[in-house]
Length: 224
Image (cartoon, rainbow, N blue to C red):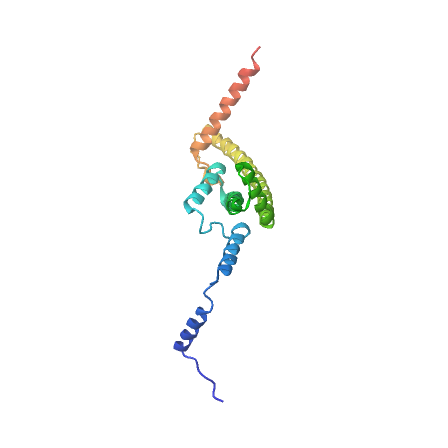
């Protein structure tokens, strides 16, 4: 039998036919499952900003953390971004819990036979907890995991930044010593020649601060 050759036109027709069979969920149940999958990935996966989120608010949220921690180099930036994303997810969990309870109370108020407003809300909330206990437990579990991630990431960031700042201080003191030596000899000094990233002005500031501290300590030691 001679094999049938598939032309580019035939392939295009086949692709269109296949696409019609994979257009996503069509029933309400299927759409709800798809939405829950998106929610799951929003809590535990790589998707940080969901379609329902405010992108501008998220960017402002991240900017606040970068201004607070002033990261340098890629590792610190990655850790700060992780902290920002983790707190964003924690806020989302809190909002989901509140919305879930509010929706449940609204749906169950009609089924509670009482005229007392507080009792009505309390019983409606109890029904919501009973029906949504599994979802609420999952949200709580995600919240605990994210809280641990936040704590561990913050600890790592602080350790790395402390190590980096101590190294910078040591390098700045070394650069100050070399610059003073050049000044004593009347020679200009370029910090980049010794691999320093500090500007001459930064090094001068360090020298002046060190001199003032020495003067302050001498004056303090002569106080009665």
